[in-house]
Amino acid sequence: MFLQLLVTGLVVGSIYALVALGFVLIYKASDCINFAQGEFLLVGAYVALALVVTYQVPFLPAVALTLCFAALLGVLVERLVLRPFIGEPVIAVIMATIGLSSLMRGIIQFIWGTDTRVFPPVFPQTPVQIGEVVVSQVYLWSLGLALLLLIIFALFFKFTITGIVMRAVADDQQAALSMGISVKRVFAITWAIAAVVAAVGGILLGNINGVNSSLAHLGLKVLPVAILGGLDSIPGAVIGGLIIGVLENLAGGYLDPIFGGGVKEVAPFVILVLILLIRPYGLFGKEIIERV
Image (cartoon, rainbow, N blue to C red; front, side, top):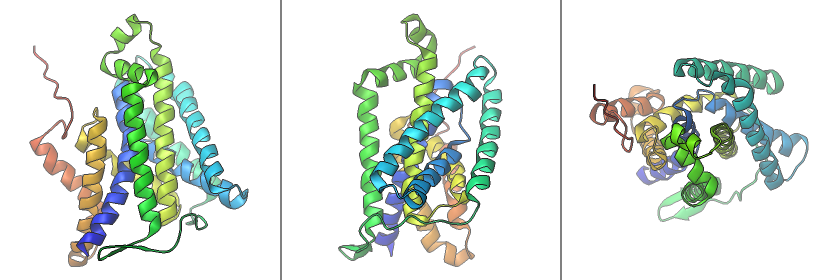
C-alpha cells in the first residue's frame, strides 16, 4: 500500500509542481499572487475536452489548440485586467485576481455546467506492474509528461534569451527598464506561460479524475506548494509539489480511515504551517532582510 500511495503521490505532486510554476512566475515578475490560477486550469481541461468529445479533434492536436488558446487567454487577462493596475498597491492586484477567479468560474459553469465529464481513453488501459505495485498507464504518462515539461521550462529560463530577460525583470524591474527591456511584454509572456502550465495540469488531471468545476479548487491547493518551496523559487515549486503530493496521498491512505475522512484535504495546509514555522520564506525562498 505504501508504494502504491507513493507512486500516486509523485504523479499528483508533479502536476502540482507544474501548476505551481505559474504562481511562482507571476510572483517573481510582479510580486502578485494569482488567485485565478485554478480557473486557468479548469478552462484548459474543459476546452481540451470540448475539442476531443464535441468536435472530434484528435487528442494531440486538441492539446496543441488548447495550449494556444490558454496562452492567448493569459495575454488578454494581463492586458485587459491586470495592466491597468500597474503602479497600484499589490493588494489591489490580488483583489482583481480574486474577482477574475469568480468571473471565470461563473462563465465556465454557465457554458459547461457542473456535471463531471470524462475524456475518452487516450492512454493505454493495460496496467503496468512495477515490482509489487500495479500502476495505471495514465499515471505513468502524466508523471513523465509533467517532469518533461518541468525540465523544458527549466532549460528555457536558463538558456533562452526570453527566459534570461524574464529572470532579469524578476530580479530588478528598474534595472531591466534601464537596459531597454520591455517589462510590459515580459508580464504578458509570464501570464501566457502561467496559463499554459495550468492548462496542461488541467488536461492531465482531467484524464485521471474527470473534469468538473471542483478542479478549480486545485488552485488553492497548489498555493501551499508554491509557498512551501518559496514563492520566488522555480526549483522550490518542483520540490514543494512532490513533497505535498506524496504527503497528501500518504495522509489520505493512512489517516483518512482513522479519522473518517477529510485529512487528505487539510494535509497540505498543515504541512505548510509546520514548515513555515521553521523556514518563513519557504524551503528555497530568498530571505529578505530590511535594515532601518
